Length: 303
Ligand SMILES: *[C@@H]1O[C@H](CO)[C@@H](O)[C@H](O)[C@H]1NC(C)=O
Ligand SMILES: [Zn+2]
Image (cartoon, rainbow, N blue to C red; front, side):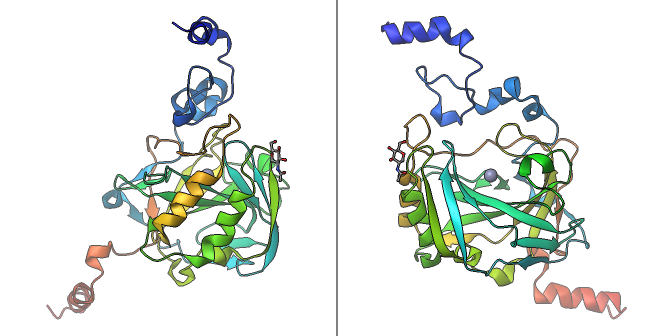
């Protein structure tokens, strides 16, 4: 047994108040709390309303109040700061970026966005749909306008509105995403920061016209302290990104430990008593024109 392994076994119990980490980061030298142990330092991570979850589309409930979300500032060109926090890269957004509608109780202003990814060819999203894990997921985090910080908003069970978009591999490069990828390359090490000039959120979110189909549920932050203060909105339509782009994203950054920053997702949590709602009146199989015609004829007593 090497002395470092011996040291590790001997002292592990005393080093256990170490930092939290994702599953892939754990090693004997780098004692850290993996997701299943996060609750030891952050009790809320063991709560009943945790995120992410697997969305079972057969069980989602249609909610007619889930109208299209109204976006402000999403097409503005902005200068935004990007920082490597040691476990992710955060892209800070100005409060002029706002959302309302979509069944949200009030207007929310943006704070930041960040991505969750896997390894070059592996799965990487946090939420899954019918068990399918997408290669990447972006979270755009907003707080109620009356709050000044994310921390302040966390004390309100509906204080935060997070928008999640999945990515899917496409044969065609998504040129609009390259500004984000280049910025990741400039914040390789923990604490590095850079500025992107002339950035538009629509650089990242193509398909703006398709934002009316989404899922909604009440959940938590997906990193400690796992605060149960988040109204989640997950858009059904994934954003295309090429395999080469994914390979670049997953290779550019390092964790605070110096290891490659990959597999930055928390495993799915139990749904428990919660219901996942949807803005989509008809499950996709039922929304064909023929089915709609039959429904129409039936309603008017023609059949
Ligand atoms: C990034 O962080 C590393 C390690 O702390 C440091 O040596 C380097 O100068 C930083 N680079 C920039 C551009 O800030
Ligand atoms: Zn996230």
